[in-house]
Picture 1 (spheres, each protein chain N blue to C red):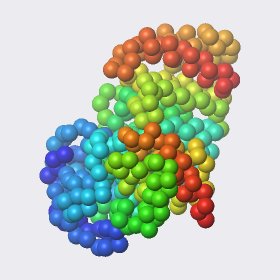
Picture 2 (picture 1 turned 90 degrees about the vertical axis):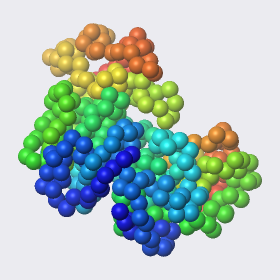
Picture 3 (picture 1 turned 135 degrees about the vertical axis):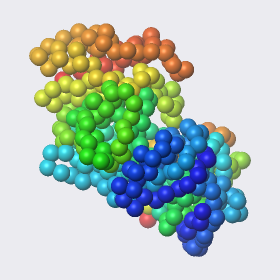
Picture 4 (picture 1 turned 30 degrees about the horizontal axis):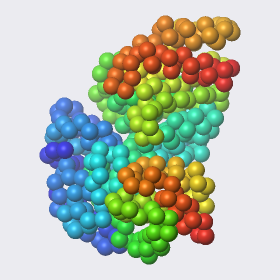
Length: 258
Length: 150
């Protein structure tokens, strides 16, 4: 990768002004996807000196710094308390520990990659994203809106939950991208997310509404998901296969979390 | 740009390009034990230890290891020697391309989880591909090697 300059930002202010200065200036997360991209970078902005690598338990949420690695995240006893540990189980299935020692939660979320297991699993919960300067946006909103963000993602806030949870990543081999992933959680309310469609995780809102208003027919809920979900073709699978997988795993998920 | 870090117990200062990856800097410096298997972050042959944790050197920019501790298999010669005896006995030493990386990952596993189950061994090593053994002999060797360890 061609990089003209590598800057270890001494402050968020410096990092942000560098990012703003040019679209060819990029923030470095774990650098895994940046490596695949092959784009030429003018200034690569390193955030490692800014203390964004901590996981803290606050009163209502768990604060995950954007530079927290996937490995830190999946081994955190604080994160394990959320949804019966489903977030740890989900992240654990990504490649191997060496990869996860570099990949960051911030990088996984910011890019809202279609195949992202991190995004799908997080969408099973109420999550806010904190950007510098001064902006808080829900993950639900961030995933739906076009484009990325102008600011720098500093923190992912996961609201505490003891929801019954189910996560599934369907993949052809151990180290593969998912063909489909999904996350279903049930606390006072249901949240149903399907991702790698091949597009990024999406909430099945009409099915959620049906169940949250007292609906008991799980097959009907699954059909509502299938009607609403946009499942498409990609190199790994056709939409018909994705539909078949979704139908089976959504039913299993709903059985398990009811 | 100059990057100062500790390599296998020695403080080094390398002159690298900002976009240069650690594997290329290490191999140019003369450390050939680090192998470029895929250059796509998936095979694990390039694994090194950074601050005692496994990392993919093909995907880590050298500039990012400033001030850190980097280890290649040369830093764990005695352990690697002992592990290789187990590999030999199980028939797990074939082309050897994956092996230096596996030795480092086993070293890291032993620190994190001194008495892993067979399943935990396979799980921790999932990111290290081997084109020769079909993995069973490798797992047998690691299981036996770690079986007697404190």
